[in-house]
Length: 213
Ligand SMILES: N[C@@H](CCC(=O)N[C@@H](CS)C(=O)NCC(=O)O)C(=O)O
Image (cartoon, rainbow, N blue to C red; front, side):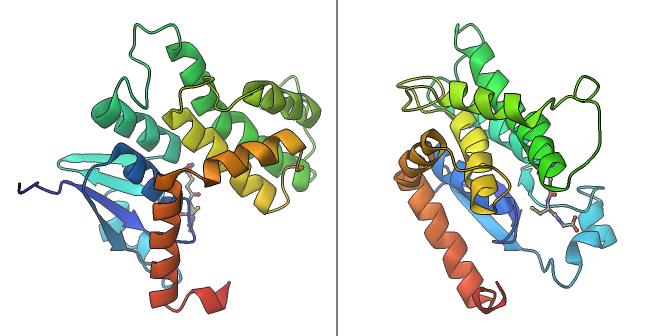
């Protein structure tokens, strides 16, 4: 049966938009990718900035809706297209834990890793990301015995939180604790991740970007 494509991701495979391809594969909805020439500065042009004033990727278009910020895109997609499967329903006792880890990635892990690797000076009590050591232990506790953040149920929080752990360990901004790496290995076996990776790799290859890494 004919399905109307409404989801359109403004995409470049070397940006956080690559993780949104994974989200789109997890929700199992049709979508289109529109390549943005980041090296050429297309994302800073008025046409792009009319959708996202930050001039950043990812930016997702869903019909008349424009969604930006990776974690917000993830939660939006899960609620709209996979509620109860990839997102606990609002009345579920798991909802708070789900939101906690989805927000923790951009509000604590990202700035915490940047602060640590760039040796920022700050007072841990005055910033939202606190100390690097406490963050490391909190990540370990969140992963726990796994396999996922909510135990047996894989959710979109794993895509956001796990995608951040994968990215930060890969780029040497987060130490590679054994529990982090086995969690990333489990994530790497997700069929939706493997499909998204193949799509991102193919586009990078077609655009001649893989030689520029
Ligand atoms: N907080 C944003 C960050 C977006 C972001 O920084 N995107 C980078 C690529 S990963 C970007 O567009 N950089 C291009 C630029 O700022 O010129 C999110 O999580 O989506």
